[in-house]
Amino acid sequence: MELAIDLAEDFGSRRWWRGFATLTALTVATALMTPPFVPLPGGHPAAVNEAEEAQFAAAGIGTLVEGSTAGMAMAPTRAVETLSAAPERPRIDLFARLAPRENLARMLVRLGARVGDAGQAQLLLGETSIAPGTSIAITLGRNEGGVRPVERLSFRSGLDAEVIITGSPAGLRLDRQSIAVDATPLRIRGRVGDGLYWSLRAAGIAPDIASDYLKALGGQLDLGTDIAANDRFDLVIANRRAATGENEPGALLYAGLDRASGAPLQLVKWTVGSSSLWYEASGVGRQVSGMIWPVSAPITSGFGERYHPILHFMRMHNGIDFGAHFGTPIVAAADGTVERVGWAGGYGEQVRLAHAGGIETSYSHMSRIVVAPGSVIRQGQLIGYSGNSGLSTGPHLHYEVMRSGQAINPMSVRFIAHATLDGPSLTAFKARLASLLGVGEKG
Ligand SMILES: [Zn+2]
Image (cartoon, rainbow, N blue to C red; front, side):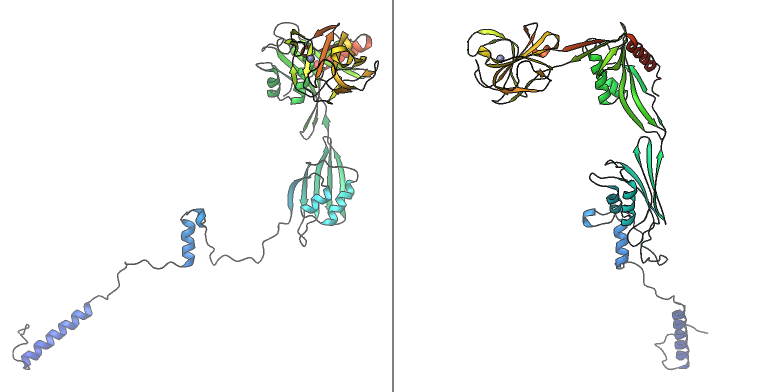
């Protein structure tokens, strides 16, 4: 049987209809077997909603000036429940420092404590004063309408005592607890090295102790030339150490110098009557005390030869000139007695003081004198005012220092006082020296 029939022939015949039916059946079968049509992905990206945009902004680190947040901030999911209020901490532990002109009560109120508790704590403290800057450990209890009760507070009222205030429903209670303190002195030794002061500082010695040590040594030797790099310093310093670990260094008790060549220097501070001196191990005390400048004014002419501006020839300048304005207060350069006052020729109005060790000082061209002959003068005491009296080209102070009547350079003067221990005080001194030398070394 013929399947492929030309439908253009014999239109309407049985053969034609059979051919037409075959074509229809094939077309329907093909249509039924065709897979469904689905749109292909591609083209423009889908629009980004606001939440997604925030995620992109957070993940992509943009510049902060554009308001970008840095890093990935995870948005909460539906699993997260929103809180109606932030939870309160049941207890706050803090350290606070008392501000200047602040008392404990004011500080507690500032930190959010109950006003009643603050007042009571202050009352319990009574006469005890807390130094500004004292660190106070405070524990505050549960928030009650914006304020918290004081549960505990404590601070050190000294190296050897701690004050503790504890709170309870019955109110606050104050306890003072003493802390054991050990008063063994510290001994620190080391090599002098390139610079004694900095070697002392590097050994952990405080600036004031280091300078006390240098002063003690300076009374016995020249710090500039008599100390070698290989010499070793040896200090004993009073010290209080609390059981809780704090240290409170005190005064310098012993100043020693073990010299690489020569005898060691062993100095102990010893008080006889009202004066304290550094005594050598043999019991000889020596103190060097300087003079102070008589005015606070610049030096306009030093000691030595110079051309005299009025007399017009070279002559020795026997003192120092200070360019002090008319009426500048003049004070005594050292302790002494007033030897003479009044007119002294070219020197004009002059005060002359006599000091220990055959030293004299004179102050010339003054405008006014306020001391009388014979009176005892302390170092720094006012003796008059500067002026322009006598042979002078303008207001200034001419200051002279004389030893045994001979003018010397005021820059070079040092007073040396000697004292010697003997008898029972020497025995006591030697015992003290031995006990200080028995102190163990630091660390
Ligand atoms: Zn002069």
